[in-house]
Every structure is written in structure tokens, then in C-alpha cells.
Image (tube, rainbow, N blue to C red; front, side, top):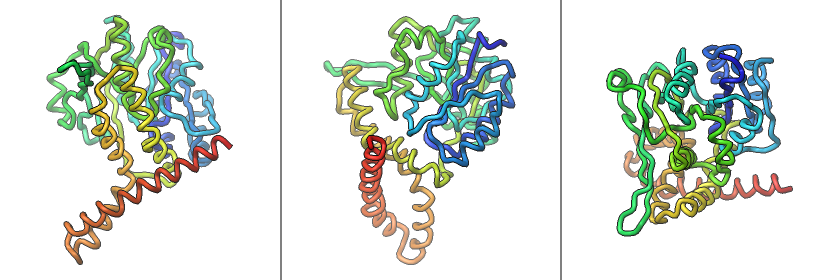
Length: 330
């Protein structure tokens, strides 16, 4: 496996603190000849030091003076590679041995334009499926265009699902880890940077298939996506921006205009992104509920937090990201 066949581009997903260990894991299970580009995305100084210590001379690091959306980071990485295939990884995944070889073999043998592995979630030892192929297409009902998408086998035990799977064409792969034929993404003009924080994988896979390309699932390749918490303090500014109300609204407006979709789906998707942002509050929510619940009753605490903690978080998120915007423009 030489440098002209495949390269790897790693980008921040929503936290920085996972990056050094994830990078070390990828390096330990990837052939040494494969070029690796790590788009840093303006991490805290200590995380940056740890990244460079983990990657050494084997990894090409790309610095940025400000936070990047995932698609913007992918485009930066894409501009640094020249191989036939590019594998895009988020910085919070752990890969299994042989993961890359299986993706490349599928692309070569099937003529696939996009190949997704079997995605796991939690910790690697949890062996729980996040997605094994999926669905993403537009349906038209009563003259209204709506997106239909799903993750196959999500939440099921890996050992229960794996015997049912084989390499197959599918509609959807995710950016936790995805192999892309370079010519295909360049023909599309790169990844759509109007999509700041959600629907990127759906948009990309539908665009590829709309152009006649094929998307495959290769279950012989596996990786684990580690969803938060935990968080480090240095994660919070980027995490807050990543799932902010501003980025969410701009993303959904762009996505729904691009695909001419019924906007009645937007409130549901805004709720979904809000829940992603609330993951920062989960540890505090659990502690407060446990502590006060013994004194005034758990349900009363839940009701109080519902009308205080979460609305306050929304106000602070809008204020914080306004300050970030002013700092960037200044």
C-alpha cells in the first residue's frame, strides 16, 4: 500500500482532547507508507503539543488561527493530498486492525466511490453498533419533498449483527470514518462548507449517488466513535460553537434550500442539534439531580432544571458565540 493509493485526513469533530490518543491509535494500525494529514483546528496549546508528540515526523500537521467546521477542515486536508483515495477520519475514533486495507479492497474490487466501515459507538470494548449502512434519500408526498434517513442496526450488540452483514451497496456512510475516491469529491467541488454542523454525510452521499456514484458498506473494516462526555475544559469553546444555534440555523437553511425540502422538518432537526449541545450539561445534570432529588424529590428537580438550566444555557450559548464571532472579525 503506497502513498499514491490512499491518504488519511484527520479533522476535529467536536472536541480536541480526544485527538492525541485517537491519532496514536490510528498510527499504530495503519501501514507506515500511508500519508496522514492532521488538520488541527486551533486546539489548546497543550493538546497541540500532545498531537505533535504522537504524530512526530510521520504526520503532516496543518494549523489554523481559528476554529473550523468539519467540512472546512476536510477541504483543507483534501488540498494536501494527491492519492487515488482519501480516508477522512474524525479525531475521536478508534480503529480496528486491518481497517484501512479492508476499505481500500472494497473500493478497488467493487469500483466504489465511497466506502463506509461498520461504525461502533461507546468504547471499543463495548462492541455496540452505531451504524452498519443506512438510508438517505428524498421522498415526495403530497407535493412535499422530505429527507428520509436512518442508521441500520444502531444500538445493537456487534456480535448479534456481524453474522448478518457482508459487503453491500448502501445509501449512507458517515464522516466518523469514510473512504472517498478523490476524483469524485474533486468533481463535486469539495465538501459543502455551507453545512457547518449537521447533515454533511447525508448531503455528500446523496450528491455522489445523484451523480451516478456508488456507496458501499464494508463490515470487514470497523472503527469506534467515542461520543462525549467526558470533556476537557479546552473543548468547551469549540464544542459550544460546533453545536451553536447560529451554526445550526445557517446549516439547515442551506441544506433545505439546496435540496428544495419541506421546512416543516427543521424544528425536529434543531431539537436534535440542541440535544447534542446539551451533552456538556449531562454530568452536571446528573449530579444536581442526585443531590437535590434526595431532598425535594427527583421529579421536582427535573422540572426546575428544565425551566432554568437549559434555557440559561441557550442564552449563554448565543452570547458566547457572538463574542467568538466578534473576536474572529476583529
